[in-house]
Each structure stands twice: as structure tokens, then as C-alpha cells.
Length: 153
Length: 154
Image (cartoon, rainbow over all chains, first blue to last red; front, side, top):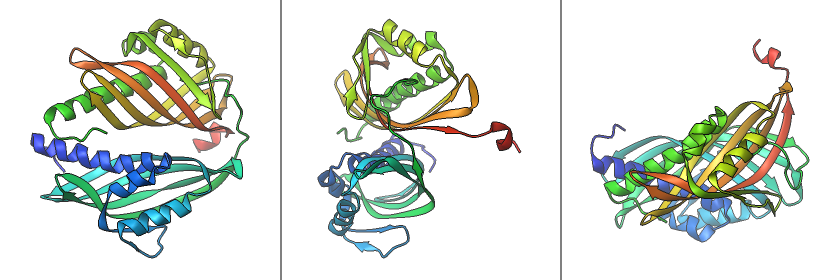
């Protein structure tokens, strides 16, 4: 979208904030906060599976899928947002690094896109549809040093 | 959590984010004069991996010297960062930024250190902009990879 007004800028940043919060709250294991990001009738689909119907069903699936995770890092960049009144569409590029408690030296790299729809409710934005389209996945291994020595910053 | 409702919310988010992006770009360019400008004089910084926190590095000058030392053995650095949240309370802010970094070894151009990390920062308002008062770097995945760069160029 082309930002022409202050209202456009506010909406664009507010939508971006919601999409980023989805990633940060999953990674923090805060699924109560994740639920608040979805409308009650939201739809969700991951890796080309069946559509999950309803915000509760989406979060229940996320809780189950993330149960064995040790570290989750959903690196997300919001690429496009289109707003039409109280509805919006968005597209995000994501690279995720995920490790499990039973194998901290193995990481799953997942590269793909989120295709989203959002709706304005009670003055704020919520996700009404989110589909993850995966384009590349890979398992990599590396011993994890502790504490880390070397380049940081 | 800051709900974006006003122009001032947008302005603060953009200006605080600009400071956080400038931190990364000056580190990558080894522009330590520029890096010093993003910090409050009394800023502090620490990092963790596998649940072990480093000691705090206290003061902006000490942080800049520490970054210089920690990255001296890197010939190329690429801190790819996405600022997720800027939560403002008056003249103070907290921010969460996600980071994927690639850092090439100076003594081996075919070896890169890749990390997936998060910055949990605090900032304070400084005139029209923001300066960093605290950085906490959480490293979640760290990996050294090697690849013959001459092959990558075809």
C-alpha cells in the first residue's frame, strides 16, 4: 500500500505489530497472548495441511506442535500490507530456526511465507486468516558451546 | 504492549527502530565513532547463551571497546535485524529485535559464524530521537559453517 495519510501510517504499523507479536509470543511460549491476536472465527493452515477452523483450534494446534521445542526463533519480515477499510491482507517472509529439548545440537531451518488476512475489531487489528507456505526446510547439526566465546555484538 | 493509535506512536517506533538498525549497521561497518552515538553514556550490555549470562559491560565507551575486541577477528559482518516491538512509556522504551547474523572469519574467508539471536533493549528519549541505555543479547543458535567462496561465485 502507498502511505498517504497519518491514518495509513498508523494502520500499517499496527498491522505490522500484530504480525510480529505472533512470532515473538510463540517463541516466548505465551499462547494466551497468541490467542488474543486471532479473531474467534480465524482460519489457519500450516505446511499445506487442512484448514484449522477457529482461533481456539489454531492455538491448540500451535501448543501441541511447539510442546517439545527448546528454542524457537521466527525471524519475520513484513513485506506487504494492503488495507481496505476494516480489512487488510499481508504477506510476510520468514526464516525460522527451531531446536528440540531432546536434541539441542540439531536445528530445523524452515523458510517460507505467511499469507494473511486481518480484520479491525473494537478499534484494533486481529488475524482472521493465516497460511504458512513452506519453501525450504533443512535439518542442521552443530554442537552448542556454553558459554559462547567469540564474536558477538 | 504499545497499541499504535497516534502519529506520536508511529514517530517513536520509527525513531527508536532507526537507532537499533544503526547499531547493527555501524557494527557491520566497524564504524565505532558512529556506534558510540547510539548509546547513552551510562549504557550497559550483556549477552547469554545456553542460559549463562556474561558480566555487564558498563558504559558506552566500554561497550564500543568490547564490540571492537569481540569482532576484531571478523572480516565481514552482517547483522540482519527485524525490530518487532517498541513499547514506549513516556521518555523510556523497551524493544525486542530479532537477529540473524553472519560473521566471516578474518583468517579464513571460507568460514562463517551464524547466530540466531534476540536483542532485548531499553532506550531513552534524546531530543527528537532515542539512545540505547541497555542491550541484552540472547543467543539461541550458533553454528560455524565452511564453504569454499570461490565455488559460490561459479
